[in-house]
Length: 150
Image (cartoon, rainbow, N blue to C red):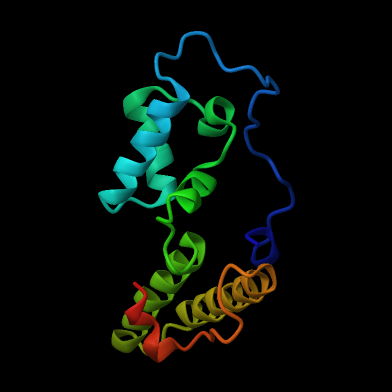
């Protein structure tokens, strides 16, 4: 979605290695990693924060490579997923920050355009998640009641 609302032309980024075998230098067993994911999630960390902590503090390069499951799948098995997906919640937080800025700076038209683009992304993501069944089909984005979810 980022390329859709910008002038960027390419999809340049780093790629993960193509190996399917876990590295030999990892000390943790798959069961330990699953327990760490559960523990960090209970502390209130999001799935992306859990992945970053596992990478930086525990030296786990890829949870999926070691356990065979993504962090989201592990959390879903333990019934620890939030009611809304993480990317949707972060977009809604961004729209709250933009609205607060617009209350103070009413003539900031670039910010207003950013709000329009952010809400467009929210609506597009919500449509996708309704289709996949991740959120209920009756859920609707309402800027006034968004503070409940964040």
